[in-house]
Length: 278
Image (cartoon, rainbow, N blue to C red; front, side):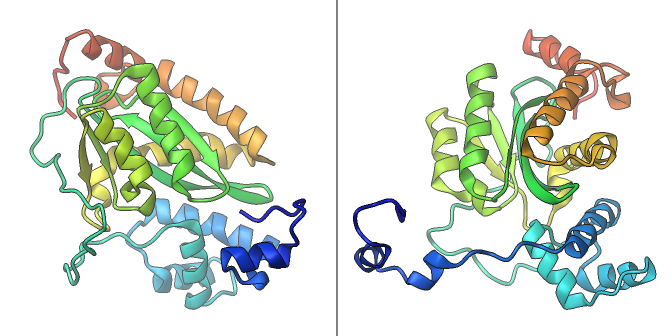
């Protein structure tokens, strides 16, 4: 928005846009090496115990030898985009302009490709930093249709992944996500509406509603990301491209009678429904 190379001074640009100059000149302080190590461990614990909140995580981290308090753990969790998962009472109704859609998968038999897709974001630790990953998953086959990585949790890279999946495989009948701001944004929902795709959203904090992509995160982290300690975004992109190719074409799934996602996807896309629905 602010062009540092413009003929107009930064002060004048801020005045025109009604922005505070402090925010323009501010450079976020990079995370310390200690915080990055903490975030990696929090991520591991969250995968194993998604119901642990900041208080329990802090207690566990102290048992693991870290000197950290609950408030600092809560701050890092917010930065990572994770929270404890448990059913909560509905204490408030979303604002009128919030794009929250009903959950459509309850009792639904999912037995063919492109019937239901799911998407979610996750935190990716690197050797000296972190990124965010979004993936588009075909629920029936577990095939990863597309993915993107980013250093921010804005909707644009999520929309890019969605548009690539639709361009390559056609649109799904239903798209299921959580209620994250990336998936309630008009940029995301407008793409689905244009394809006449029904939009389904999990209840807040209900990881079980999107369990298939949660299982994908566990696989990609323990089978690739944690083993590699990627140095930068370029390495992450290349490494995940290799991993998801392996995941789709070679990694067999017990729940699919030891077939690969590609084998299930292309068989059901050709009109052969799954014997055991997702």
